[in-house]
Image (cartoon, rainbow, N blue to C red; front, side, top):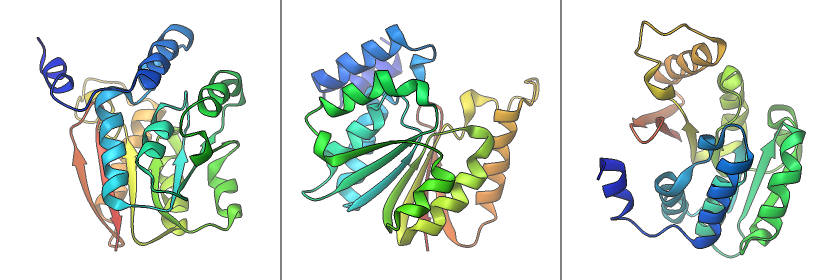
Length: 208
């Protein structure tokens, strides 16, 4: 048994609907491992229950797994606004969201969150960034502007499979984007932040 298998056998079970979505994502989508999965999904749900946000902004819907997990944790009246810039994802993702038990808590939007999310005119309590790594810094600035003081921004993939410390690895634009983002957050006096070594790295950022 691996440490990951041990962890997953000692946390809350993955709901069957999410398990089926995880399987379908890995069967039908090219980069299935991008979905949050069991452990991160349960953490996202718990973070929502701890923060108790009314409005959540997600950048990068992919197959909808993380949006469903966050919606699970929302109280009555809460809403996840999730943006996916790749319109080719819609045919797969929209049915999984709309047929889910939490469909009434998710608004799925095809579009560029950097330009379109501020146009919603909503103050968010929490944001989850999991989109194009090349534009993480720009996405963060947008999220910081629409998240309330004391609110949280969660950024996924901030260790980028260890490439941030592997000097042998070619610095492709996505790796450079993550490194630029991490360095930028470190020096930003507007926030407090910590990186969790969970899966591919998860940064918890609080707007002060």
